[in-house]
Length: 549
Image 1: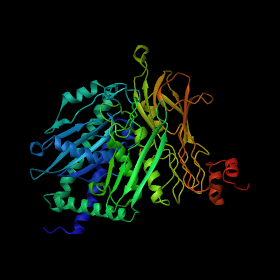
Image 2 (image 1 turned 180 degrees about the vertical axis):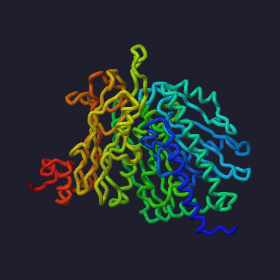
Image 3 (image 1 turned 180 degrees about the horizontal axis):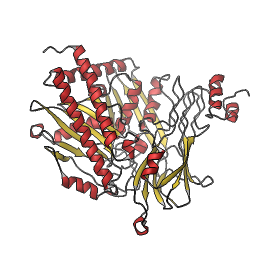
Image 4 (image 1 turned 90 degrees about the vertical axis):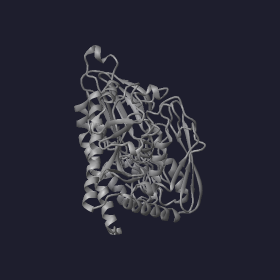
């Protein structure tokens, strides 16, 4: 059969529909709210060589781009000739999968005509894996929970019950973990079934021609986009809050005719707390940030990822080595786009947004140790809330929106139904977006307390408490984040374990994004719109923007 480019393009589009269906299966069958409500997942289709052909739009770069590399590793661990229909492989090794123990990655070979023709894969976040739990307090990876090396989860359709029981026995939420693992299995199976159906409909026995078309088309399109950039090397530094003291992140960005090299040399070394970042995770978000500017219309796959290379000296905080603690690797890993954009804005000054809140306000909650003695509810839950994005060259930043993670904010009603907490307020923070010709996105204010009279723990690991999102080209900084107990309580540090007692209210305010361009250049119409909608106050309009009242 002659396979034309038009036919291949139709098949490519079908693959994109298949992976999105995969993602929806995972979301709709998951138990954990961070998956079900926030979309903290990835799903993808890979060819026989383990190259990513398509990924679901639903998902996070930290899961998607690490998955693209992890499949190669798992494929090498398990010889293809020994694989059987119905086999599924799994790991949560942070240096293979997605940077910390809570993310489980599954891989399933797809058989067609008795042969392996490709793979389906997916990743999602499990809420609790024992140890000290989701927080930065671990001294090494062994403090942080259960590490599962690459292994077979399902053998010819038969679940490895012993492995599942080990996972459940090492969790404060065994039922949720079991349900989430079943959801991951269903995701792989759905992708495999739809891929086989597609091959039958199009009458193809192999994905080779389609894979070559997808990867080469995407790779060449990305190289063409890179070739339009100025060649050179640019450097930037980003100061972040850190745990006990600030941390300096550094990067150099070298643009050549056909590839881009990002290097983290000069960044501070690893610390004793779990905010260190494996390179696979730092690279995932850094490359995503670059691809948002360079060839953003080209689908994300092995071809479009290939021209981007990321390095960093072993032992720096963006290339943590085992057994470093990495539970909260997203805290700094999600700051890397701002670091990268500090380089890229020097080459493309009119194309790069201002800094944003960036690090999502991920708030793991858990019952206190003595809960069993008092008969209170045991629970482990992870909340996600977001700050404002940086203003863009021609548009305002987005308020209470996750960039770069893309994780949706936790919903109030499902959270209150899952855990013994009560929300009193959730609203945008007026004047928190950095002033500019284009205004930064606003952060939000959230107030939460115990709903049943029992104390609960919060494991804080957030950024932008000390170092706000910087404006660009004359734009002002966004508001810093704030955490405290009660309206008049002292400001608390952004990292560490916090006990919220019965009768107390946890108040946290997420950061705003930086502004772009001089505030005096903002149009009167935009200022009036912001005042009418409560985004900026009349006082700020007058004193910051110079508006005439």
